[in-house]
Length: 90
View 1 (cartoon, rainbow, N blue to C red):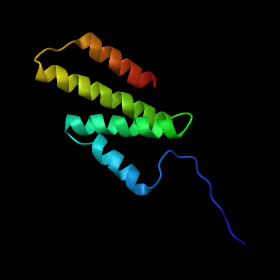
View 2 (view 1 turned 90 degrees about the vertical axis):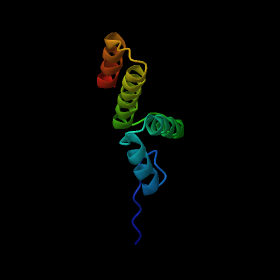
View 3 (view 1 turned 45 degrees about the vertical axis):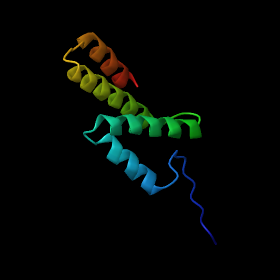
């Protein structure tokens, strides 16, 4: 008798998961942008993105906005507050 286990996940393999984690936790903004692109690819594979990945996507967007504002020496708290609120709601 053979047992078949089915799981619903947007990831094709463990390496894809590890790659996304490395990009998301990197200190480089370009890596965070790449992580968002990877999440967008995952979202295209399934009808609805898992809640954790959706939240991660918005948290990464907040980090990118904050880093860009720091580079330009201008801090717009209203933009950050809005982005954080969206991340929390997701």
